[in-house]
Length: 158
Image 1: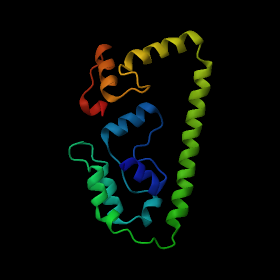
Image 2: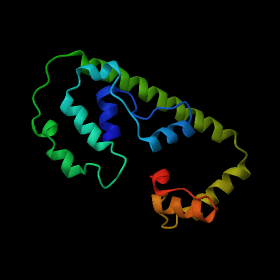
Image 3: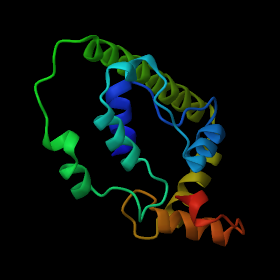
Image 4: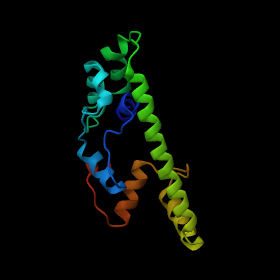
């Protein structure tokens, strides 16, 4: 929820990076800031809620119930006309274009992958997706890493 709220209010991601590896490293570090211009018009209460939602320790992180009861949510007032909405929407548009570009690039690369590798990837996915629901959850991902002999801490997997 914290990442979504951060993006909604700024149009930026809290843990940016130039590559997937760098993004993952930044997520593991869990270091973010509110130094973007888009946050100049965001209230301290909103930033407080984001901070409580972006806590690395799952046990200390705000739950959905905690977030709902946060003063910023409970004391919602009509927003004054400001540049926040315009800037946030423009930033979100730019973010979505970047995501779209990344998806397009991945699709292009996947199309260039020889068919035999696609079949191998499909088989590997099916083996990892032990409950057969079409997605790989955290437990399945960890089990696959363990089986492949890769040891990561719970924090690195989170």
